[in-house]
Image 1 (spheres, rainbow, N blue to C red):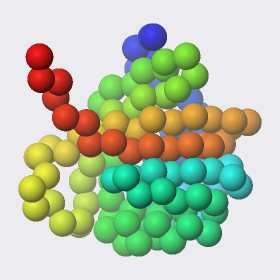
Image 2 (image 1 turned 180 degrees about the vertical axis):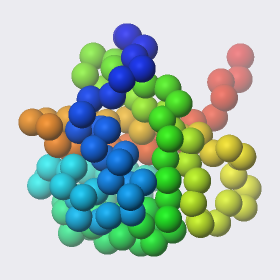
Image 3 (image 1 turned 30 degrees about the vertical axis):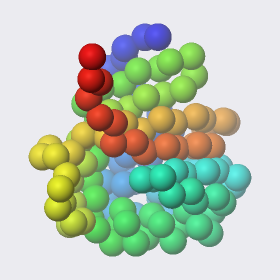
Image 4 (image 1 turned 90 degrees about the horizontal axis):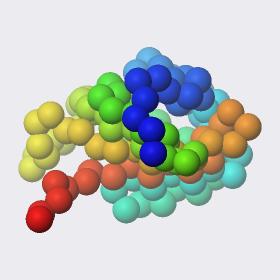
Length: 121
């Protein structure tokens, strides 16, 4: 596992597209057979992902800022600070979630967004 300060260009393009609130640009970062899991909800394929992106990322003016990046044997773990116009009731401030991303041929094939809890030792 290697901690990095740089992202794969496909992930950089994805974050840039989200922050520009451009549905088409966001969709260009996904493979045709992509899977997104956000808050334990699965979105398979372009049509379902597009509807999710349009409503919950673009519609809520979500922005994300990477704060930590790890390439764990090809599974990118990108911790990001989230902001936007979504309901923040009960959420930590700042909201930092981890995106687990797999790429194929420069496109996202799986994206899991997890609000991880601090380990309790």
